[in-house]
Length: 297
Image 1 (cartoon, rainbow, N blue to C red):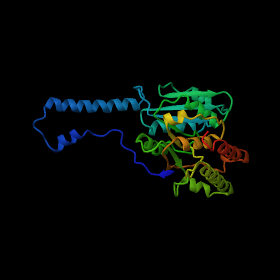
Image 2: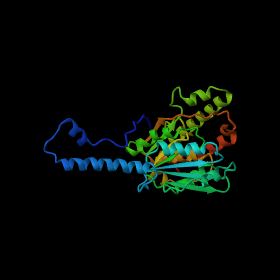
Image 3: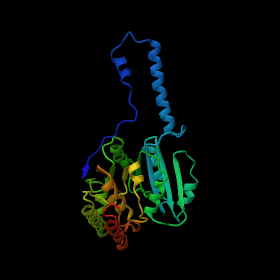
Image 4: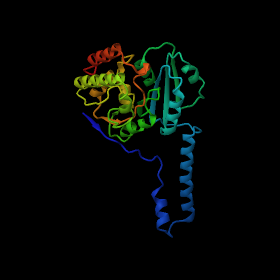
């Protein structure tokens, strides 16, 4: 059964309580040298956090792994990478998988500076989104694993709202739902034309079919923001290579996870664009995947 929440993001660094108390209620029993040492220790922690955030100090423990499947996204992938670096916690690794792009995406990726928390993978031929996600999963180390599309239709900042419930042990799986964002970009884009309305209708039908086969109550099956407990998603025997991966993952986490949540997420793509148009073959692939994996197998 799904539950909807809007988690609050906790600040990453808070001032120690003893410093606040020292300012508000002077205590003559505190040794001045000890007090100065506490200040030095706090400043040292702040400096270390800044160094990690700036990439000067390698992260020893990975909390979050972000998988980014890429296929012909040369114009948007630089913004996606910069945005992930900007909003994600310091202990985050980014796994970029080029799935046989022919628009120069791979040439851009291989020119990126090497970093300990960045993995760049490549398939010479296009195998499909599911294949790229599965390839990325094999390289994840994080306690939490998140999926972020490379077309910038989804803002990585919204991914934080889906990550925190798992870090706080409130859920094992969190989906970012476009339908829950009332008055947001997804709704506005879907007003503009029959193509958008059809895209919304198809997604709603596929989500309904998924709910009937899994017993869940999701509002957006094919969202590009999906977040999982790392050990859980790595334990699933995934087999889909193309668009059926969303249905397969959903069917299998419905059996394996005890708590699945949805949180709102923005969506800024125009579904009338050729790259977002859903054809009958793609919809049938999703339906086939729903039927094949309906028992979580």
